[in-house]
Length: 337
Image (tube, rainbow, N blue to C red; front, side, top):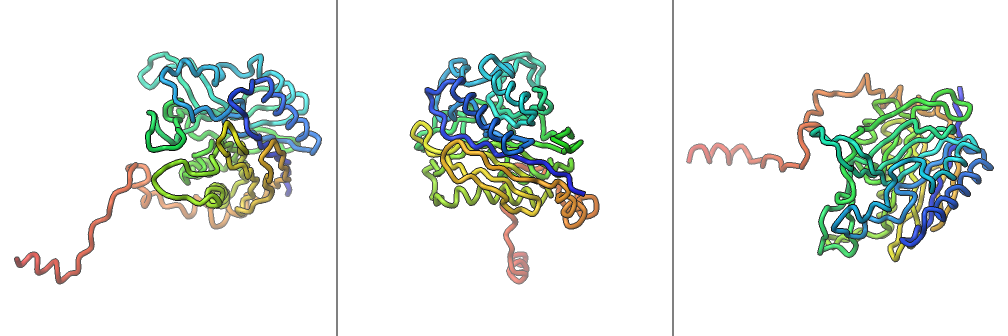
């Protein structure tokens, strides 16, 4: 039996450092309007959708960067987007920089910063929140990089795990929805955490440079995009889920972002892809019943997973070299000596 929802990947073109919230939110509202006109039930925006990708700039005092963050949702500046979501009855994934005043792991109440995404119901209520776990880059100014990537400076590691919720979307009574953000897509553990909760729709936003800015090796331009798509396609296939990967694109403050937003089905096929470097809407019909094939056959976790063989996955972070093999004769000679 079909369980059909229509999903829109709302790619954003570049957001320049000087562009204000009012301008960006107006662009996002237009995309929501177009999504409604094209029959979409779900709209997915990129990571850090309200601003330029500010972690490319170093600041000594993080309090001076507070203008990049949101302390409340909605705020007066972002209210028009929430009004549009409500007006058109659309479920929305939104990525943003969050300031939270809450206790840390030691119980101390303080100002905390996260790279965050939320799922917003058509009513405007936030029904699910996720905070990015796999933060790339570095914390201090790097002299070996052409462009800084300071996510570890601007954000703490997410502390909400990988939640999945079941909520109505369009005419479907319940859709199992989960979220990832940018670099999370490259880690199979992220997808499997969601897959173990029977996720049916993974929404993720990203702000990925079109070129590798490290000075420690060469990665061809076309491989950057290939690796991004490969991660999403593999995650969808191996966890029998639809995935919507939505980018920022184009020349942002002199730095090129890759774009190529995609919608992927549970077979790992790309159903739709953005082809511009600007604001662009890509729409696809997703029959959630397609998730059942993988979930009940090759990726039937209950039948085929072997926890006893996976101990290294949760007990070890860095890789370690294996033992060196020696021919048996050499080992015997060594003992005799």
